[in-house]
Amino acid sequence: MGHPGLRRVARKLLPEEIGSDEIHRLVADMIDTLHDAGGIGLAAPQVNESIRLAIIEIPGGQTRYGEIPAMPLTAFVNPEIEIINDESAGYWEGCLSVPGLRGFVMRPQHIRVRALNLRAEKLELELRGFLATVFQHEFDHLDGRLYIDHIQDPVKLAFEEEYERYILPNEPAADESQRRNS
Image (cartoon, rainbow, N blue to C red; front, side, top):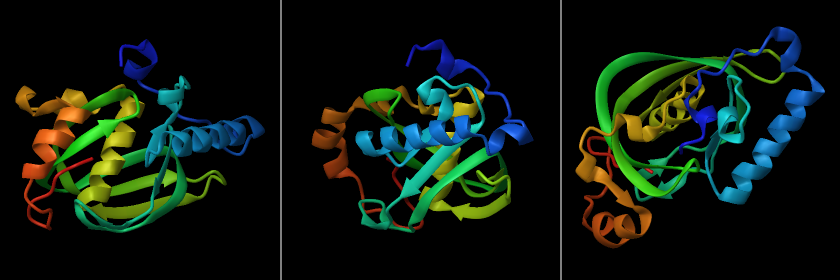
């Protein structure tokens, strides 16, 4: 947080760039970075590349947010989000670009994502709940936004250590009607 590259609107990748060796090397580096950091998503601007590219990988399974569907490692090129339903829910979000903090963010919980993969093939996903939140969080980076920009109540911004010690133990169990974020 504070690096000017995180606040720029990233440019679209041109069709001839998508399958290039340079982009494949970048994605390989992003995957290494994501795995080293233990994250579930990473956008190119987070590694100082101002292009509309993000990777997401979610192991899935039972979490403190309830049962989360798995998302295999996927690269999303020039993604667009369509909000299908404005009904929102909140999660405590964290970010590799804002280390040491968690913040409670409300986001729409039913979206459609359209993008290209690394072979320039069209991808379209309809997402709900936690997955909808993850995609909005990652794609915000492509527009120069961070999750902290969406925090409505500054009282709901905490250091991770304090979040784990004081907030997490008092959070109600996650279910479809009441979600908390990571």
